[in-house]
Image (cartoon, rainbow, N blue to C red; front, side):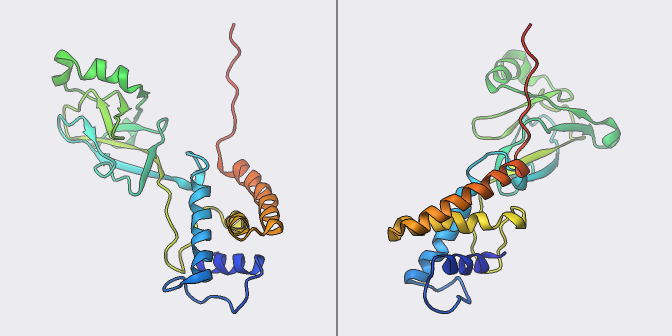
Length: 226
């Protein structure tokens, strides 16, 4: 379903009068409200978890000699939201992935006290770990001694609004109805339509439960303490 079809599905569920919409631009009044409720519902769903599978993306960049910090833009992370901290790897570019190793993520305080203190500020070598700066930049430890390293990994996208009629939400198609049901709750609250709100809430909770099972990492239990 695209933005326009979701809006029309919402109008149908809410019993709106008039013909189906043919556009999502240049609208006013109730039609504009329906579009806004759909977009708000989509933004709301994206923000319900920081690690949705449908919001994962990958990045790759080459290091710059003696440069420790790399912004999301410098790391080629488009529409960046948050780093997936357990996904970083590094290899010598000339040797390729056969030279690849994991880059563990360190706490920023630990990193700062080690790599940004005293003589370590100018100690350049092959990076062996990294941290996230308060500004969400990648900090390599130590700063690379050459430009010949490639860093790869994954990140989570920032929530994106629906704008054009043909825009398609990034979650799997079978869960697009979740947007309709969440938007019904916005409509029902605005119009004091209790029956619409309750139906939307009931159906949304069902779809959300399936979405969470499908699109969130499985829960793992740690080993018991001895």
